[in-house]
Length: 97
Image 1 (tube, rainbow, N blue to C red):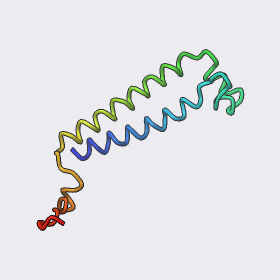
Image 2 (image 1 turned 45 degrees about the vertical axis):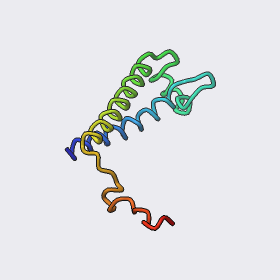
Image 3 (image 1 turned 120 degrees about the horizontal axis):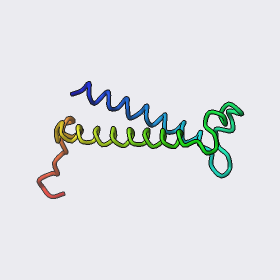
Image 4 (image 1 turned 135 degrees about the horizontal axis):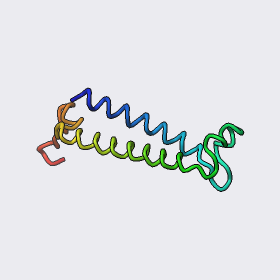
């Protein structure tokens, strides 16, 4: 189970990094990071490139699915909390103060 969670975390982080780069490469109203790459960036990811938008959607889908799977697996793994590992919450004094 730990190997699955670790691999999901790796997919989650890698998809987040890919999303950051791909979103910055897209050209908006004022240009974008794609202009920083010069002519090569414009040729690869042209102004009306539909491929990069599809790739962004796929990367976002992978990001979302991996986040949901991490959450579901952590919930199924147990209802233990960090406080339980530390010995629980200290109880209030019995004298009422």
